[in-house]
Length: 181
Image (cartoon, rainbow, N blue to C red; front, side, top):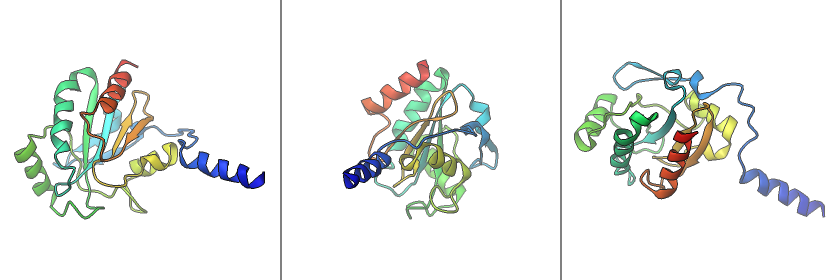
């Protein structure tokens, strides 16, 4: 009986969100923009924010197109897309200027992009540490194009693995739901 209870507790803990007290909200975090500007999440209060770690040499790089389409179609409906370049998975070796040029030239990216940062490990940006602490392991990027959705309340609403396209029905349904909240 004790073994079954232990097994249940472990399995339940692996597949559920962390119990979040949210002493901080996403709005408490800033990023340095790819152009040297500040991207303050507090500027996006009452908006749905998609934070996605990106890379130019990844098999999922074509998702830039879907992200730009989301930004174009939903920015007037209180949605923000923020691209977070990272070389944590060894697929973004470029400089900030090279990354920006690549994104603009190949995908016409106009949504906010940060400078290249770490999204995993001890040197992860504080936003990613916050998401992990409050949402659980689902907030930790396992690969490039991992998506964290922050609801209008400043809390993580959900996360999506790299293979989930931003144009997928499941993803768009959540976005529509969060925009209406």
